[in-house]
Image 1 (cartoon, rainbow, N blue to C red):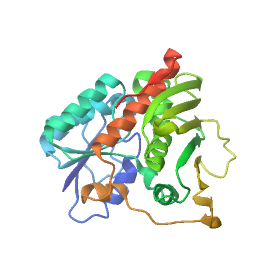
Image 2 (spheres, helix red, strand yellow; image 1 turned 90 degrees about the vertical axis):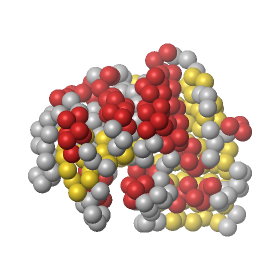
Image 3 (tube, one colour; image 1 turned 30 degrees about the horizontal axis):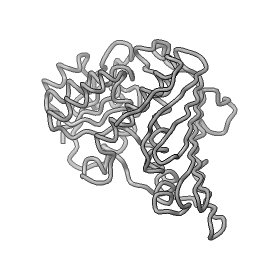
Length: 312
């Protein structure tokens, strides 16, 4: 399998870390999507470096492209790969606007390529096994879900301050929490109201969701985590059900139900990219497009200061 990398702004190194352990994988090229990335060499000197990603695609004809440019440009790269019949493993969000999302969906569907996005945090062991417990009925019928993403801001590239290049903190960071809420509960989103702190980039956001079957949900996210914190991020979800409560935090699962209180510390979960390449349990394209649509609508609800209805 011939693999190339387009951009290195997100989690492409995580993909590379797995792919270098996979038999019969050949790294045939790496290129930036634009000069905004400041990418001038490959992160592995053995990977040929190109300055023009389109020329690279046409020359090396890879089987798989790992796509991770500045976040606002991911959609256009996916479309170019699809036009060439190249399978794609892309950073999320996979589009920056609803119109572009429609174009990405059409390109993927019409080309017939294999397609997946880097929803890696669904496969973090505590989140992976926590979702299975909730969906298997460990807390009964879920009535409320709240999720959190909190990160240190640290030093970020200049393009974070350009909304056209960055795309927004909700699509970049909040989409993980949106994914957890949807995946844990199995319910679809009906509407969202959003408030944010700061602009270009948004430094904090609070989203309240109306969901199917009367379920209520919310997510909060921020870049205000102190540098003195012991970890870069603080990821959480709490699901309240008719027969118990489940929380995921700090790599642990706290489950309280009729059997008592348990703390679980799972350490194993599937590798997303492996599942995708081998036809296993990955995130299907239609779900990726749905999560992206919800994230974009949540971001835009803040800009319009109104409730966004979510269809589909």
